[in-house]
Length: 85
Image 1: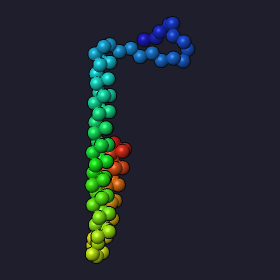
Image 2 (image 1 turned 90 degrees about the vertical axis):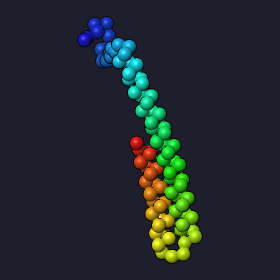
Image 3 (image 1 turned 60 degrees about the vertical axis):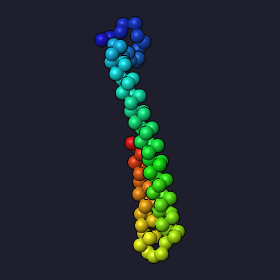
Image 4 (image 1 turned 45 degrees about the vertical axis):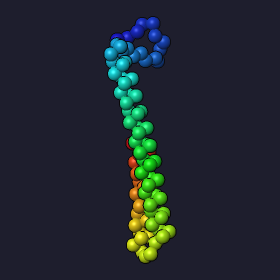
């Protein structure tokens, strides 16, 4: 549908009330899901990084250091995933 009164180079989008409500509701649900995932990512990152640091600092051997570094790397990976969701 072309609007004869519109300026050249403009785009017009028409939605009925139900389509608009559905679009807004989907956007709000997606935003809330992203916020929850980010908060969960922060918590899990803190848990794994703290556990990894503790394991590395209180290490009694190479296995503890490797586990600690792996835990820190996994925590960083969880944060990266939550941030890029």
